[in-house]
Image (cartoon, rainbow, N blue to C red; front, side, top):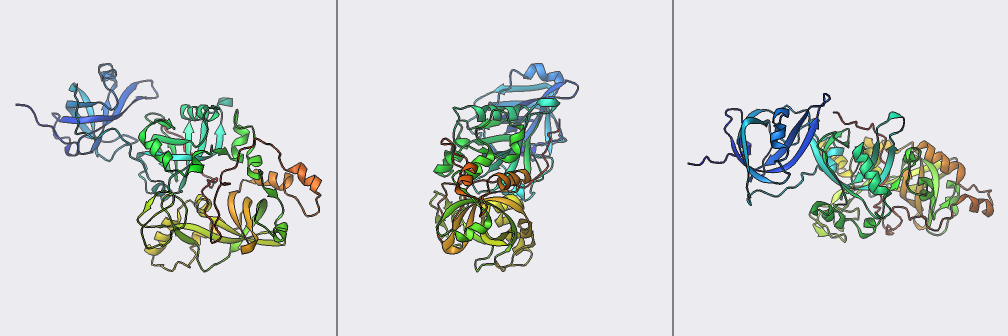
Length: 483
């Protein structure tokens, strides 16, 4: 009589004669600081329950060439212990350890779901809704490269990029050593143009940002798999063609990158001028200027609007489901930042409109999370500005804006608060009132092949433009993977 198959969710340490029908979802090798290697893997049964598996060094030769990722099999006889792995990749409280008497037979099992990924929501990462010992899968499009460290002077290679999800949430992602090198090789290849979608497995999450683990993480870049292709297809058409740019901070460590500096990209096709000159503009104009955020300009619309869950376009009715122009079927529109702020420089003052992605990057939280937190605390008045928004004030920044004289305001396309970046634009590009046109011409780069900056294809509406380009997030401490 054949032994029945057990369910993964029922596994406990009461016996060693477990019989499991599973798919091997992932397998990886781990080498400790003494050079001793063992295998770890994740298996899943037909109910979708997963458990982590350990194959110790003394059983390595028996199983290393037999076990294949994505194979289905029957596993008999194994020890069960508490899941005391430093980094866990599933929620099961137990782990399986192969014995000398463990057997495994490869067999086709159609009832087990195919290999897939369990992506962590960026909004939850930004809100800190993560287990400190849990490794997560993530997917996002690279909106900017904000730091590159080469392996000179004994330093480890690390590339820090900004990843954006389909809701507009941005997080820092740090790629160490072979992962950073793989990304740079792809980015520097002239054949690779357009958006870069990254899928990274087994990422460590800490302080609202992520990093690869030393062992087990897999980095997939624009690969032909359903998850990446589906994500790419949901990006706006103009964003699918945009290759991510480098921030000012990445320049000193960059080798072999773009021919043009981040500052040149920032000012390209824009008029660089002082804030005092804004008042003289009579037509819509793309400008670059330096200013300090002063105070909120309170409008009858408050500090947010209701928009699409994928892109940042405004919902026609915040209380009704609809299909957005981006193709997303929106059941419930979500709050997105739209904050009007007075900025100043010297005696001059002007009103700027800050949009969702810029505010979320500086504040480290989405408008939806901030709004929900207020409601949970008993504040349901949408005109009340939460204290957290004060983080947007008293910041000196470089702005790339669309000046809209009809509405006496400027719409922010891009911004940067990096001190060196701001100083370079202020000293080398800003045209004062008393400068001649000849002097101005010398300041503006004239390179025919300079790529269009992210955000230049945004369609601004008179009632309130939307902005899809990514910006540099606030400074954070990088996570270094633990061995």
